[in-house]
Image (cartoon, rainbow, N blue to C red):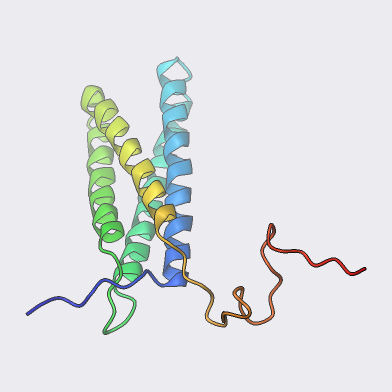
Length: 160
């Protein structure tokens, strides 16, 4: 039995995936700054690093939900599976990273953190590379859909 063909990702779940990937990347960059601050002797940064770790886990779970919605939008359609598998891997890695951090295995925690930030940034690039489908009301005559204003940079008509 063959699997159904891969369809383009649906619009709203793809926007949710992009938003969660962007938030996750911003939190990952914040985590690196807080970790560096702690290692430079600003010990109050450790509490902020811990709080941001919880936010990273929540954002990774949001990305998991978005990846599932992109993959399985309807009964007979399936979107790309890459965002879902990357989100599963990120949630597992963030959970492992948190456990390693609480166990104070700093060498493993730092190396895993570097790999995790790389994976998060790869997920961000992948989420923004997926093509965003046209709006539901779009036609050939009105590519933006349902009388909406054109995108900037399009043709401009000048009345004389």
